[in-house]
Amino acid sequence: MAFYKLNKFHWHLTDSPSWRMEVKAYPLLTLKGAVGNHTDPNAVAQYFSQEDIKEVIAYARQRFIDVIPEIDMPGHAAAANKA
Image 1: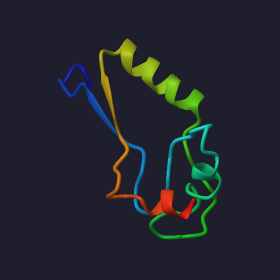
Image 2: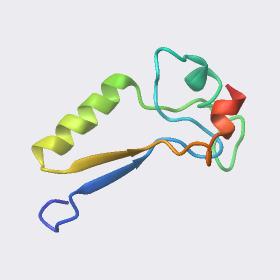
Image 3: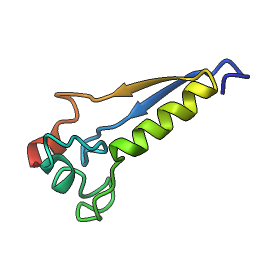
């Protein structure tokens, strides 16, 4: 990405059906809020653990890519409200 000057990674961590980031202080965000997706509201919970996030950030840093997390509130608050 850096070679093509696409050195920004806009990481969409919330959307209408689910919450995709582990927050240990708020476990219901992933226990309840990470369940479902756009096509199946009962799909198994999928989210990035804190370790996953650290790994992605370290990988990007080595390649001079800026990670820009997006936690869109209140726009995509359905998952947080569900939790």
